[in-house]
Length: 139
Image (tube, rainbow, N blue to C red; front, side, top):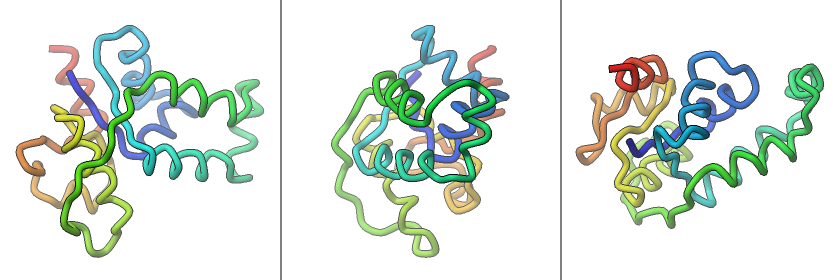
């Protein structure tokens, strides 16, 4: 299964495990393939470097650089597809859509209201929550 995780889902999986962490683990076991793009990795890099995540990283004995590099090595990079603006209220979410389209993803995995409000699909690609994705993988 080909997945694109939005930045918050990837960050949650890397820092706190839980349901999004199961998706990271599935990718490590090669049960799914994660895709990303340069714009999504830049966003993740910027978010991970924020001081507010330092305690969570310290508790796990990790640096944000090491965690980021591990994620970057885990994903397959694609060049984002050119798309017209879709999410006016949060244009950064368009990077997720452009990546998914370029990756020919099966699923966009997100808890983001803007993405979920698209009605469950974008150009034939399902948009689902991390919990829904784990359920699909467990079938």
